[in-house]
Length: 234
Image (cartoon, rainbow, N blue to C red; front, side, top):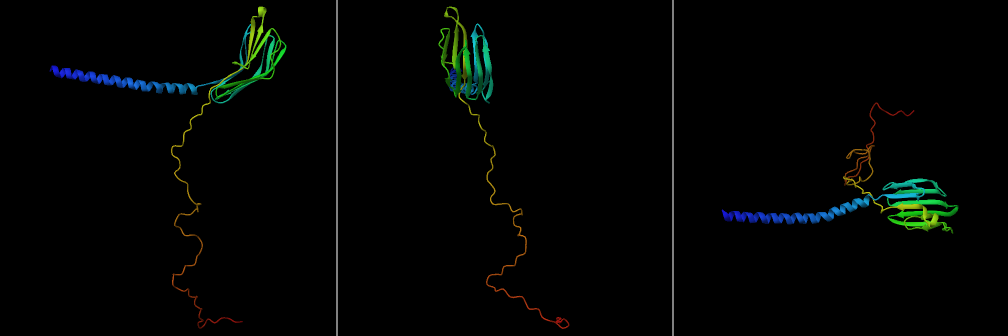
């Protein structure tokens, strides 16, 4: 009995060890797969955003006009103004893998900065501007680096009193929705043109019988006159 119990215990421990190794192996296989699934979901959930102008400091203004979309392209437009500055001719759009923001004209403290724009395509962002930074010790203007333009208005002691951010976009890589092929495609196409008649039915109209091979067609017999039926001659 002791040997049997000891042997059974060893078998049980060995089986438990194999089960633990199998579970560990399954976990190591499932972990990368789950990571890939979560990564794919995150990539598919990337949302594109774009806005025209925002401001912070002595006067705060939320990003406007603004749009966000991870599919169909959405657009918005408008103009924004604040204390001593204005941004006009703003257009923004965002969709699957794209985002754009354009401001036709920016004026700060009576100084024209010109047009500012930002574009994003498949995660790559580019900036452009049509004017230049004005020569004013109370204004600091930089282009690019996260926004089409960043404008700082300096106050007493050259401390930043107001920051205006112009043309900001963000997007990810465009995703292509999966296509589902037809489950039961047609196996073949009909050949020839339909005749409208059941198969095997002879064509309409009269046809002369075809003579058998090796025989000569005979002419029709001449009609014979019989008594009492003479032709009328006049």
